[in-house]
Image 1 (cartoon, rainbow, N blue to C red):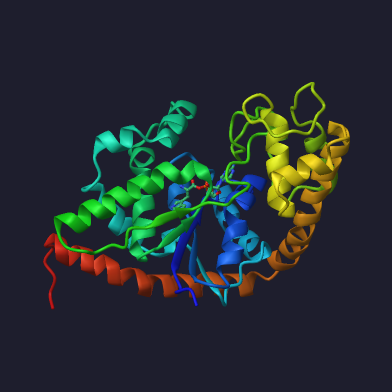
Image 2: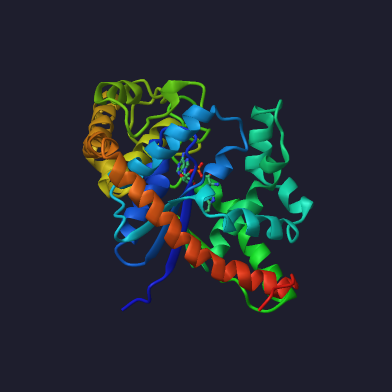
Amino acid sequence: MEEKKIIFSGIQPSGYFTLGNYLGAIKNWTKLQHEHNCIFCIVDMHAITVRQEPKNLRQRTYDSFVQLIACGLEPEKALLFIQSHVPAHAELAWLLNCYTYMGELNRMTQFKDKSSRHSENINAGLYTYPALMAADILLYQTDLVPVGEDQKQHIELTRDIAIRFNNLYSPTFVVPEGYFPKAGARVMSLQEPDKKMSKSDENENAYITLLEEPSRIMNKVKRAVTDSENQVRYDIKNKPGISNLIDIYASITGKSIEDIEREFSSAGYGQFKNAVGEAIVETLSPIQERFKELSKEKGYINNLIREGAEKAERMSYKTLNKVMRKIGLYQVK
Ligand code: TYM
């Protein structure tokens, strides 16, 4: 039998989750929880690197937790918690900041992208965001990090920091690896298919959220930007819009790209879009129903949030203490 691995991943509560979040990350999380030791975190401290309305942040954090359970994460199997409830994340982030070079942070495309979109608020947290992400991952001696493709660069940096620290002192951190889905690792905007689908997009037609009504989903897929060839064929370079829809359909149905091209070889875009829209609605409907039911169970959810924090706190201090000792911070035995 394959050895149980430690899996860690995080998601920001900065809006309702999108189809990109689901297909790129959460769907893999629900599979991995049955075979491995999984830890999933709502990363609220990452979210405040851009301004958040306090009331909204509070509500979205709760809703994010509920959404993860509605998506199929089982609190008896996977450890779920909120980042700010476990102080070791911020503590280790500070320590790792001292082992991360500005040259490395300067290269991060997410920083470049976010600082150009929020030019009025390029704060130090936005810049050192990857050190906090490295702390999240390394605290739990993580083997695998299931994420979408946009997080590849951050995981590379996490590996570099871990290797650097291990070499400077002695083996302290497991060096983690990224884990990406075959299809759905990079779901693109429905309006500008050369950009990734993002919950912070100004154009609502660019993304689908997990809680979106079926009629809106069907409409957004129908309006998705394609090309004039009217041939369902995968070609990212010349047909990014239709390729994105094929990728979404492949991820949801588990069918291969070749099978999808064959199945729709004599269909036009209208018919294909209909099938894609219906597949999305079919996947999201049960999630939406569970979300509605679970949101009402505030006592139950808050208990889970409390228990998750306690468990994560116990686990995280082991690594944090080890790191402090190796660095030479004075500890009373
Ligand atoms: P975030 O909150 O932007 O996204 C959460 C997860 O969803 C994936 N994702 C996508 N996948 C495919 N297509 C898309 N269009 C798409 N948009 C988002 C992301 O790759 C991610 O897996 N920095 C992270 C959060 C984080 C984290 C961590 C992740 C903080 N600490 C530790 C892993 C481990 C982020 O901003 O994700």
